[in-house]
Length: 364
Ligand code: A3P
Ligand code: MG
Ligand code: MG
Image (cartoon, rainbow, N blue to C red; front, top):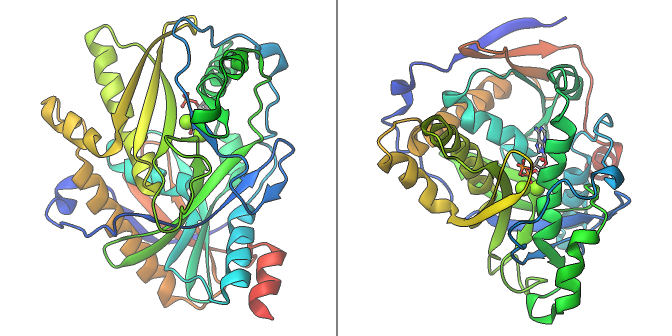
């Protein structure tokens, strides 16, 4: 049970259209980490792969039977992100500080909300030592998944298979024809991940966001990622749009692609276009910064990147202000009910979701 006490209205969107929020750009990587294929965390770039185009005609279903899928029923809270922050503070001797610290996925939900209110979400938030930590309410996420349709698992696999046949470990200049061609036979495993942690900001709200990066475009490992931003790549699959409504759907989807990559400063998105059976038909390389202009020039007025940024600034300021007025350690629920026009903040019974490693490090 929770008491609803504060409400933020999503519409009308005109309330966000004359703000001109300042974004701290470029997003600056402060640290990174890797999960290996057994989900062990390493404070390095060992799981970062390089992009190398896959062959057209590839069957994205191949190897589905041997997919090694990460168990998404496990609640990982903010553990990896907090562990990386502890390691960074240990090394630098300086405290990492920001107004909001969260996974990129939470921020993508906020950035896309003005144009898609259908799906609900629940997040937990707590203020600790001057920063607001926000995590997904994992049980809500598990329970709100729609009833699976027959091909759903296969279609999810297509996304991971595309990543597997589009990347290679190591430096592109060292790839042999043999390793390039062997990619189609690799077991697909989504335990392995590279995560970049960046410092950024929306208006007056300073943020630290962690999120997965699919690949790097050029040199791997990037020689000096903290000072010279690597050209990172986000990989996506999508059905080749042919009919008018499919073009509309794709343009809507681009908002999510853009927001997700924009937040971490990922410079390029490679879309693998597939048919209904999962055969790869085409590839398109898109510069992340060009996407809002594509949506603007199409004339369909489906979404506006500036409104999305100004909306995010406004809701973050509201979160910072509301949570900031209550005593530290208060546990909050940030919720959007499916189809509703609001985001609600309410207080939950006391309980922290911050990892013991992090709390022990910070309290001593
Ligand atoms: P596609 O996005 O190409 O379909 P990401 O693109 O974020 O790197 O995620 C990689 C893949 O994970 C996705 O590929 C998709 O297959 C799967 N995935 C990510 N988020 C998902 C979600 N909310 N529901 C189902 N599958 C998801
Ligand atoms: Mg990914
Ligand atoms: Mg991807």
